Image (cartoon, rainbow, N blue to C red):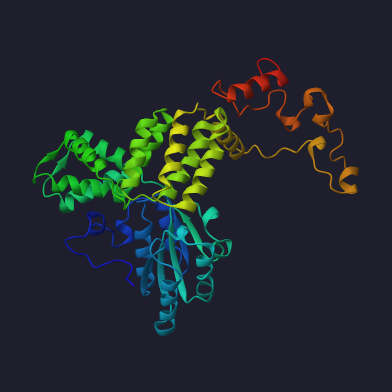
Length: 421
């Protein structure tokens, strides 16, 4: 069992050395910080957001503010046994703040083991996750926690972190403007990753030296070759993997897949990314893509490594070689944006309403509905948007001429008329 943070030493990463010791020193997440500071008494909290956005640091600061004993567990390496040890400890010393990292990796049963102690106040749970909690955390546990969403740091915030780091440990070193830009691009709003890059650059330069773009590019290139299974290069390589598939280059995609597998990456993480890619980037251009990706995920889950490399390789090469379309992905995002702009204040047309009871039918629900299967070609012209949307209802889905989607486009044109799709 460890405390929330180890004692600083010469070997600890720069990100830990520079970890803020007060809310005043914390960069970014202003809205979340204000909300956290309103919590006047110990309360279970769940922070979620991308890596390197301050989840662990905020947990540290809020627990110190409450002056509670603190313990650290990671859902990657811990289970119910370790949870019970902490719970037993509360019986001896009273309420404990438990920081649980990557809580989404706990099973539903493991999450349930937290409920009684959280409910009774024996444990103040401070949990962190990079996943949307609505999909990965039990509802009962969510109802007992305050949820705060953190966002990737913006350019102003990340530049401030670089300036502070150089001031404290730079020994007169400076960064050229294009070197700063390259570091910001490589770190993508992840403060931990940013400081890891900066620490490496400082170790490879002399005091009072100016670090150039060439220094940064050579350093980043060398880092990429040595894939770090502890997630340092995790996001760079998976990005290159996805972009190679999107660019229809199966050989490059296999190369990055091999780097991840050799580096010890979780094969289930790769499988989940393949599922997303199949729908986002291949979509209706090949309706075989998503079922294959789902089957790959299930196969990897059931057979494990090293055999899992075989379905992963098959799925990767298929997705990279398949025709591409993101039309359905763009379509749902357009529809969501339309709804979020306030396009909800319209009534559903009577002929489309459900009529489960006689009362509903008396009110006109379902009246006049034309059942398409009763018509030639199983289609009949009808209005499906609310009346207020006509004469020009919005268009969200724009099918392409790629692969199988071309057939869908031709079918829709045939039904709705030339120029409709």
